[in-house]
Amino acid sequence: MKRFLIAFGVFCCWFFLGVLFMNTTGAVDQSSLFASKVVKPKDLDTTPGDSTPTEFVPFIEEDPRENDTNTVFQEADTFMVNNLSRGNEQLVEDLTRSIQEKKRELAEDLEKLRNVKKNTNATAVAPRTFDALFYPEFKHARFVVDQKATSFLSFVKQKLAADANLHIKVVGHTDYIGDKEDNYMLALDEAKKVREFLIKSLKLPDNQVSAYSSGETEPIYDRDSENRELNHRIEIYFE
Image 1 (cartoon, rainbow, N blue to C red):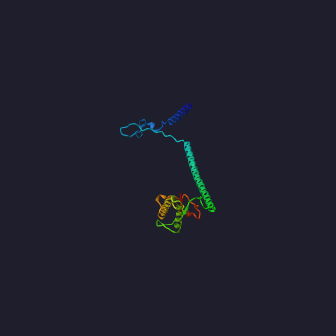
Image 2: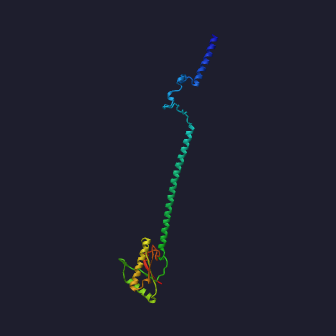
Image 3: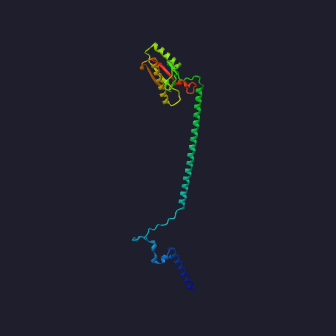
């Protein structure tokens, strides 16, 4: 009986070792028990004329630490983008505020300068020397002879009586109103009309009287002066 128990114990040990070995090596799997079914039809490529088995792609388990690293990088990128956007918006606001403040300061300085000019006693921009200053009146593109024109003609006659060879230079001027080029052409047109008036009235040669224009470039009164309209004038020079 004792020998039987020893043999039975040895048998049980070997039995459990065999089962453990089969379980470890996978021999207990059904596909391993039937050798004829080791290669299954579904494991082969079903393409006609091609008996090459499909490539087996092993499953690789993702490392959770790699996902955590990617999440950290994404959060960092999002944080940087948000901060840069806030920084750019703040920079634009600061620049806009600075520009507006500079504009206000410039406007205040210009207003102070304008007030200083208004408060000055001398309204003349610069002293000018001319032989005669004339303010003719024009109507329907024709020169109108009035009392001022008569006095003007008398003055020119006196000058020519002293020297008949004097050359008369007629220069037209305008005020600041209107376009600069338009003012130049207006002054030139008015100077030409005065020239024609002198030639016809005094029966002078055409080459003895010339017409020029200075437009609005040579005012005698400041832009803000009450007399600024007097910048629209005709100056006469005897040469």
